[in-house]
Amino acid sequence: MGNKLINTANVRVRYAETDKMGVVNNVVYLEYFEVGRAELMRSYGLPYRLLEDAGYLLPVIEAHLEYKSSAYYDDLLDIRCTLEYENKPTIKFKYEVYRVNILVVSGYTVHSYLRNDTRKPVKPPKIFTDALKKILVEQENL
Image 1 (cartoon, one colour):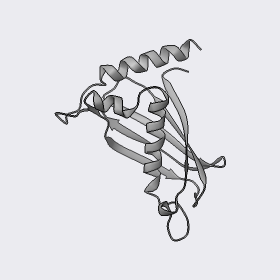
Image 2 (image 1 turned 90 degrees about the horizontal axis):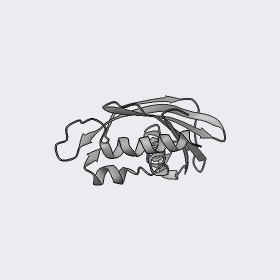
Image 3 (image 1 turned 30 degrees about the vertical axis):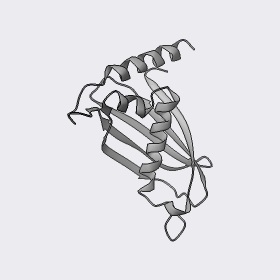
């Protein structure tokens, strides 16, 4: 599997997330990406809270979305999130959002590691790299 983490999360489109036509508003997909990212991290025992409690933040520094189809009020969406880990000062998550196996949107976000106290970029924190190494070793042993 290499240095890859994958998870699928689900969200149901709420009325407030749609426009007058009942279509999901474009900016909402960034919120769905956040759900996918947080659930991926949580599913591997690396919840954001763990990083924040250790004094680190992962702000978005770049986002890209490609709209393929529409999603509508009350649709159940699958958010497939992938992290291909590299030991770099940034981290990139990739996303695909599906409605009944129809690709609705794909994209990615890039994040920088920051120290919370200085708000300055840093290398990937040890708490993060150690946890990822453990996960990747466990995956190889499956």
